[in-house]
Structure formats: structure tokens, C-alpha cells
Amino acid sequence: MDQIFIKDLVARGIIGFNQWEREKLQEIVINVVLFTDLHTSGLSDKVQDSVNYRTVAKKLLKYAETAQRYTVEALATDLARLCLEDPGVTKVRIRLEKPGAVRFSSSVGVEIERTREDLL
Image (cartoon, rainbow, N blue to C red; front, side):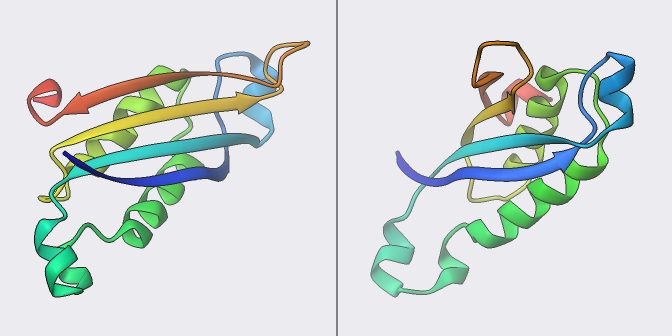
């Protein structure tokens, strides 16, 4: 399966369950792998024959900056669902990180893989 990736997309939003996390925007680092078939677009050289990663990135940023989820697990699941709305995406891997969330670490986060069947 072919892959399109978006690396280190940085959103600023409300994420977390502690009171101080609900009051201040935090960085949320998003990494995405979109599993798709790129044969047609590789031959045609037309963006409409592929998954438009710019459109996906904008949708992910907008959602992450407004969702105000309590857990990174829930936000990751929401973002996976958004990616799978594109008919060309058959599976998605999402890695979310909260830089500086745990003392003495550069970041913490989750990584999930989902298909449409997982999210029914």
C-alpha cells in the first residue's frame, strides 16, 4: 500500500483534563500517514487522482485547534475519522504529541492506526 505522510504539523489548542490545560493553548504535534493507492496519480500527474494532503492538513489543523478534547486518544480518533472521510484513504496512522506535557521529557502522546471498519 502506498503512503502519503504529513510530518510535524503543529496545532495550538485546548487538550487535557487538568484545569490549567483547559485555560491555555498548548502545542499539539500531528503526524499522519495516509494509506492509499497512488498508481493512477503517479501516471496521470493530476492531484485530483490522489489524496490532497494540503486539504487534509488544513482540516486536521482546524479540528485540533477547536475540538477541546480531554485526551489525546480521543483527539487522535477524531483526526483518524476525518482522514478516512477521503474516499482515497483506506487506512490512517495518526501520532499525536504534547510537547512538554511531562517533566523531563520532550513530549508524550499516542499513535493509532484505523480503517473505516474500525470507526463504524
